[in-house]
Image (cartoon, rainbow, N blue to C red; front, side, top):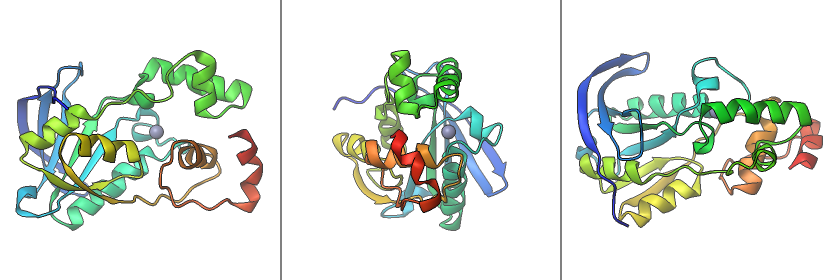
Length: 212
Ligand SMILES: [Zn+2]
């Protein structure tokens, strides 16, 4: 796979509740906004540094929505990387599986009005179920001189893309505890998108599964 061009635009320190990161703004070919990349420590010193490719989610990350697991996955990744004192988070502007924020608001309305899962709401609205790409993230990993990584993800698509870009990948699952508001969404990811969520059917929420 030929990698897209990414160029460094800015670099500064970012102090967070988890600790300090180096924040690098990359300009990609596709993205209109900088691809923010947080680097902790010196990942090239490790044989298999931790890496998270994270797609932006305004509803959970800005407002604390309980209807998905995005913020929790980001929090776990930042904590894990700081525990190891090394690693990278690449924050991709791919809201609503690449459909964007305006589409997301419509998807949420469709889900609520017709009691649909997110996949079915996308189908009803004629939107792709997942159009996210990870090749710019792979190009950033090359820029950072990382050719083998431990990827924090449940999503086999991310693993496959990096492997196709000649990056060696070991996967580390992110285990998120479901709640009654995100259970159908997480189960949909597990059952229809083959995400390795490690979820068991919950007897009190079994009726949700008929929606999938
Ligand atoms: Zn989300």
